[in-house]
Length: 102
Image (tube, rainbow, N blue to C red; front, side, top):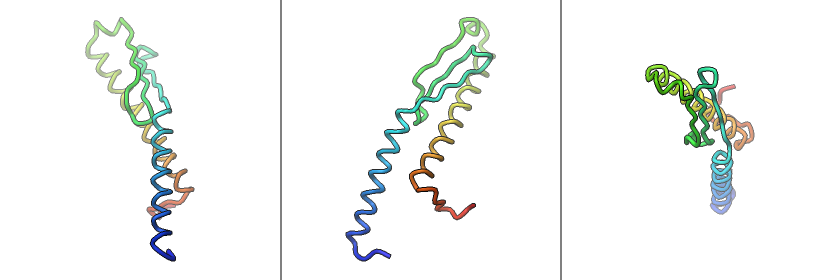
């Protein structure tokens, strides 16, 4: 498969470069979600780190509703990030599926 160890080393270097590019690309993306008709707005970067949170003042009096809306917003944002990471990783692999599924 590889004519020598140098070829394998070059392949691994290329993979490391692609991984670093992917990480930088993910960090630069922003995903925003709104719950409760916009009463809670949450923004995360492509690594899933919260970068902005806005809560309507009306919710500050209703702890239970606030908790429910925050959980929903966090879960929705995490799903968006995971889907983006998966599609970005598949793009980096050139559409090859290492797991053999179709």
